[in-house]
Length: 159
Image (cartoon, rainbow, N blue to C red; front, side, top):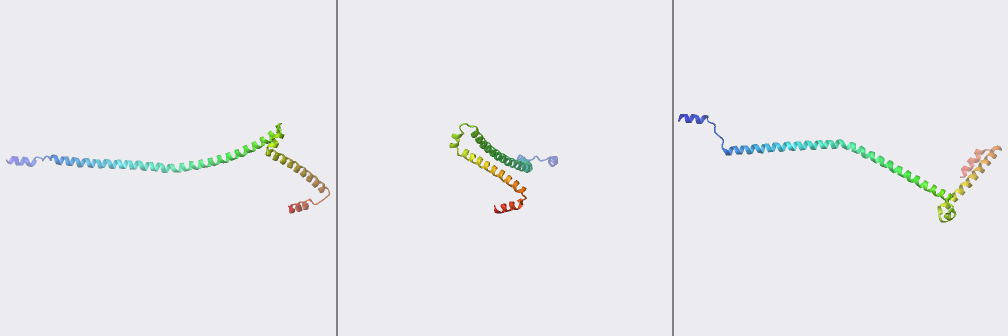
């Protein structure tokens, strides 16, 4: 009997099955919480890295957009210059085709633009003749010792 008593003191009590299950459940829950925290931390770290990458890309994107805007503006200006050049070439083509075209008399009656061009040509020729006359008159006056500066100032004052 004494031996039984002593052996009972030194024998370890085996935990009950319920206690083991409860401890296992608690450990499993604790492990799940740790795993969830790690996953959340990893996800948060990945998000922070991505945000940093985006923040670093923003200035480069802004520079790229500014460059594209400048290039678009340059293209607009070039297109406007080309448009003007094409219009000038078309006018020149019409003038030349009117001169070479054997039917220009008929077309002149039909096309008011060619009539205006012809009138402008006549006016230019008249102006050239007047300028030549003025040059000759100035040479003659300068030969007689007339003060041309005072005459020019008077004419400019009248205009």
